[in-house]
Length: 134
Image (cartoon, rainbow, N blue to C red; front, side):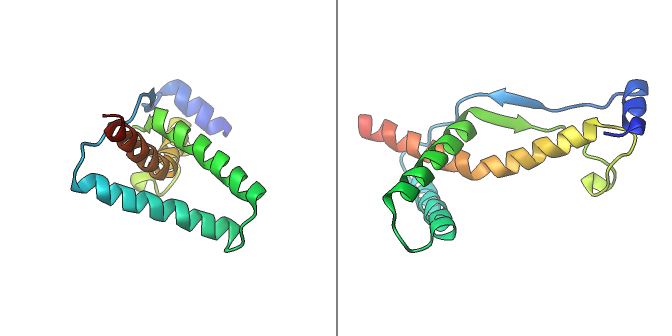
């Protein structure tokens, strides 16, 4: 955060998005739930393979599952919503040197993108739990 950003924000503050703490939506049984299940399994298996390789160690696998569970729980409840009109110059390609609010919105956009796979996985698991509870 530079001095110009502090001065620019004090003169004319920019809009900042919000972070909602909500639950994800449950999917109804059908073809889309099957597709989401296949994509979720592919994401988890791909991450497991990239991080741990083909060898199996119980301690590493349990650690991986704990980290994935924490990530999915966080992704299920936290939904960042950046203000897309204030991402910087050229649609976010360049930083606005007179505003810090565009930095905050770009970080919220980055966080939203990082949380999308976890939200997909967690909503799929919750949907399957609700289907199997009936």
